[in-house]
Image (cartoon, rainbow, N blue to C red; front, side, top):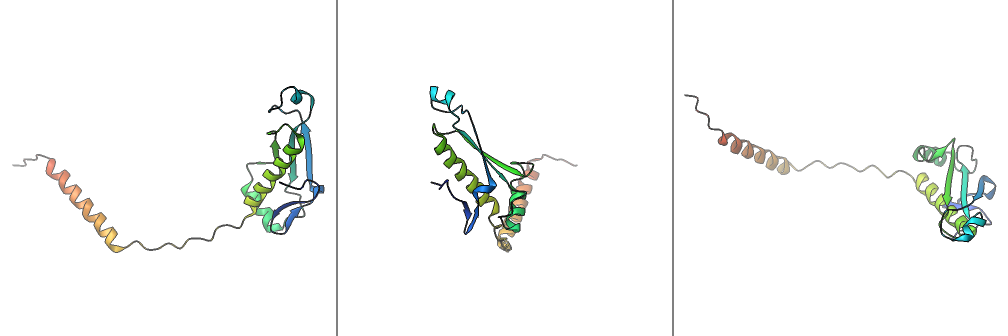
Length: 145
């Protein structure tokens, strides 16, 4: 669970202060029966990634590239309406935002070194191709006389 009263921890010691997060509440279409019609339990959590000063610049650029499809004007929005209670939806939205940012700011995987293919593998492949070609050639009933 996420502590809702303080900063939102992303990865390592980097966190987002509460002042950079914008919460919006609206009527939910999720579970809750008649309760849903009277309470604003759906949560939308917005974070202005483009203007944020708390994320390291490298992380910010990486996140802007990787989350380009999810951003609207540089703002990352996450919605949650899974639960009846607004509080639990707030926790869910905060967890989703933290997970998205943690994944988007992760360093790229180190490049894998390519190993040359064994010579025997290539020779067997070529030999098999020759055999297959000869088999197909033998099927034709050519009489060039």
